[in-house]
Length: 455
Ligand code: SAH
Ligand code: SF4
Ligand code: F3S
Image (cartoon, rainbow, N blue to C red; front, side, top):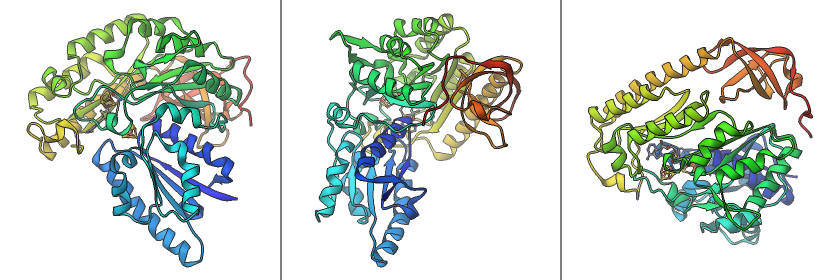
């Protein structure tokens, strides 16, 4: 038996891709390794979104090279593959910088890994695949998916046509592509049959979903969600990440109508300043976003909102930043992610405007994160005393304890819930802790008609 170790950086899409690469290599006799030390093949599934993420790959590769050298000295071998968005963006440069790398494979061509491995075994030296056949990839991936627990990711859309001026994704993932409905539904049915109770639909721009339906028409995300909600065993659906421009009325209405669709929405805004939004090519103003939030809350009053922010975009002034703070105050987020602007090679913003000094970026990030932290704590405290349904996913730190997710995506742990892993149960929230909620099981509140996790 050969052993495979996959390290995943970046977004949920990469988590999905790592699982699919594993599925792809299982028939070749690769079983999961605990770490790179006991692996015959290591895949780094990389992220190019910010400089730090991309640079980390090279330090990890340096460590892998030493492992590989040691293995070769003892007469053994180790294959190293770089996959993901750094692979797509840097291609052959990676091998030039780190010759220990055997394979470089982009996010749209990893279905070719088995033939790449075969080429290497036949003495072909290095193998490089960085083409963009997204449709081909999904047709070529094995139908079989390994059990991934009660909460699973399912990619329904890839790529992005938005070209925000700071972002590498349109270059690393290619243009928008939506998978056909029947292909997605088949994958969802398989996940549900294997014990998945919650499915998160993934796409770089998931609410732009427009896949061919069984009737030959283009289906929108709301239709797809409704269809998947009808699958036996699918109790919860989520989707991420959305662009404000594609937040259509039918999708908003779906939040009020489809009980399986969870009341949580990650809707990145990036900035609260119209001037900066324009320079970012976000294609909406702060006011449009705020109006959208009002409409969404009217459809689903308890919805928890999340967002991404960038501080220190080129040309951002104190006044622009103050507009971002004002927007955050106006919305009130349950959760949020914020980043310092990182200039990415080849993107328009990298060479435009006044780059904001690092210490200014730091100060703004701290101020923004303090506000977001306060809002997150407030939201968590507002949950105290409420009873909510939790999908238990894994054992907690203490014996008998289990950890799961609330409808609002918060981590919830409860004592005496270990036997409920893979199932939904009602929990009364007792206490909001810094990054989780402590709850107690409400007696007799296990949701009926659900098998425990298969396998
Ligand atoms: N498709 C999603 C998110 C893509 S990347 C969307 O449209 O929102 C995830 C987040 O990383 C982005 O929302 C943005 O906040 C951040 N990001 C992207 N490029 C960045 C850059 N060059 N510097 C800093 N943060 C960046
Ligand atoms: Fe990047 Fe903008 Fe596309 Fe999101 S919408 S992936 S931020 S280009
Ligand atoms: Fe990173 Fe690529 Fe995802 S750049 S955020 S891994 S789409």
